[in-house]
Each structure stands twice: as C-alpha cells, then as structure tokens.
Length: 94
Image (cartoon, rainbow, N blue to C red):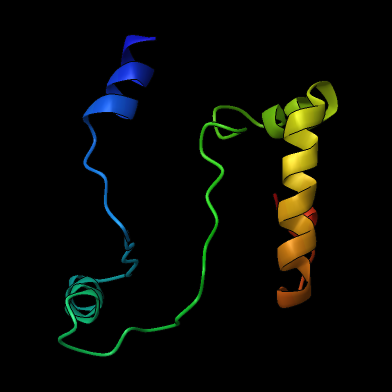
C-alpha cells in the first residue's frame, strides 16, 4: 500500500507524457529531439498501457475481466472506441 500511495501522491502531474523507443542510441536521441520539438516526431501513433491491470503475470487481465464486471465494462468500452482504428481487435493482442 505504501508504494501505491507514494505513486499516487508524489509523482509530478503533467498534461502530456511521451515515450521514446529506439533500437540504437541514435534512434533514441532522434526521438528525444522530436519530443522537444527539434525534429520530426516519428509514427504519430497512440499507445495504450494497461500496467497494473494484468502486467504482473500472464492471464491476470483475463482473470480480472472475468471476476470484476466494472473492469470488464471499462475494458469493453476502450475496445469499442479503438477497434475501428486498429488492424487487429484490441482483445486479440492484450
């Protein structure tokens, strides 16, 4: 509980957050430059992270979905919103 409390109360609140992914130092530096507005921002894709909701062990998210109707309802709402934009349904890859 102490960790969750600290994460919820001590982290900085930002209007936006960014993630940079790269296979080399050069790719990472280029990505950082894009985030700073000093170069192109590659991809322009949106990513969803469900950390804490099944990331701890394989199958945990599926168990949460089956056991908690509120979780299932929220997850279904996200899927309904984004599935039309994806090549593969979200449930198939999560």
